[in-house]
Length: 332
Image (cartoon, rainbow, N blue to C red):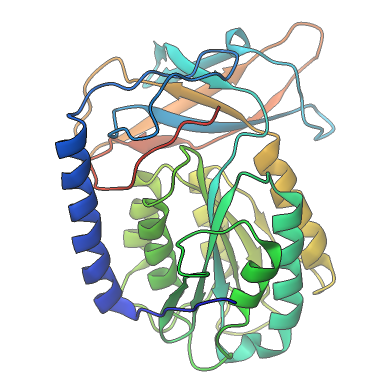
């Protein structure tokens, strides 16, 4: 049975902030800040389950050939990471199918009513196609924003429970997309995996948020999260597909715009496959960065004999501000 607990807007953010502050203080008392051991090139890790956050920058990287097919079999020597033109040392490397903490941000505004059954089915398809070790949650939104807790837990990998969470509230009212993304980014901090993602299913319009687009975009860039978007506009005059494109491009994700609801399930499989077919690179910046400065990155990859390869990842990052969060668990 799904136990749904709802939090609205600022009340949830305030409670979450106190909870995250408590978790941060607890982590410091239990384990003073040290640099945790990083995974070696084979994917093994000696890092303890409970660690504090470090300056580690985590980059999910998708590599495809000229036909768009995933390129497997690369090792860390195939990659070069440059920050402001300076080559960085890759300190952790994992090949494809690294587990992810993912949030499903689902539009429940009035116009979404006829679409929610298909969306719930697509969510189930997504979960079934994902890594069994993934941890996921659902954020439903219209005028208000609801984080759905499943069986009293903040995350689940049960396809049926997550699909039911999408149907937890009825479609009504307006669209607070930016507030929903902000709360999704906040909830991701409680996750265990280094790799984090949001999947937005919406028409991209917003007419009810307190947050602005620029605020949410900056939050996303600071969170080292990749955002995938599924735009279901149907010619709605309030839709804004450009918002979804910008969020996805700025974070290394992909924006999809299906021509029919029947395509949403196939898109869900494609998103799950893309997340599973990524390389995960980690590096500690070679020079100290101010917390308010955006650090542009370029990732290059080469493998003789494979021809020209295409790379997709985030275009840069903000320095982590020692933000409070749950224990980070490195994939093994």
